[in-house]
Amino acid sequence: MNRILIVEDEDRISSFVAKGLKAEGFTPTVVSDGVTGLDYALTGEFDLMVLDIGLPGMDGFTILERVTAERPALPVIVLTARDSVTDTIAALEGGAADYMSKPFRFGELLARVRLRLRSPGEAPPDDELVVGPVRLDLRRRRAFVGEREVDLSARELALAEVLLRNRGLVLSREQLLSQVWGYDFDPGSNVVDVYVGYLRRKLGAELVTTVRGLGYRVD
Ligand code: CA
Image (cartoon, rainbow, N blue to C red; front, top):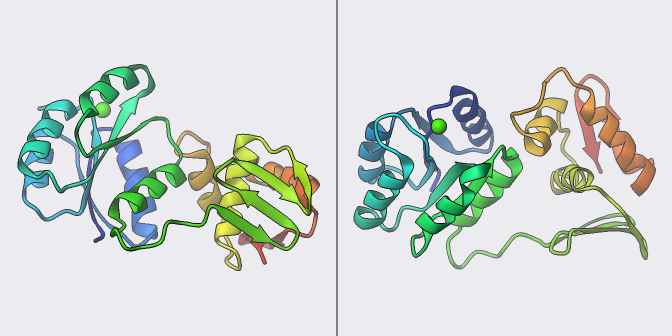
């Protein structure tokens, strides 16, 4: 359950998604035009499709219609520009597909991919993460240190979530950038260090360890 078809004509986005999925153990295949995309989708060789709407050859709505009719079991995650979200939702009505508006963070896409590929018997992911006195309530998007609630921005919470979920592992700046900020971010930026600083100030200096030359880790 790890073969993922990516139909997307923007190289920057398809390579960002493919690279991220590969790093998570999936086998991605990238196709950049609509006609080939539909052919591939109908082969039955894939477990999930990530589908762009604006494509050369055949648009994503047409592909989705054919796939829904001929391969109804194939889960589809549609990528759509923010200004056409309303059209996209209308097109998805009744189908098995999910959608994400661009730009998106890789972490969000990954969560949806995992959700779509999960077999019915598997447990849902934790909606609470606890490390020492720090507790993240992911369902309500709130953070606590002991009994005290701490006000985190959406980005701070996303960074804390990735670090806590991967507790014990060193995460590089690049990994954190792609999971929390997405492909729209300059890889040379020091934004990760800045935000780790915010988290230390708000959640406790000892929460995040700097691993020199490699990145950050939560123990
Ligand atoms: Ca496109």
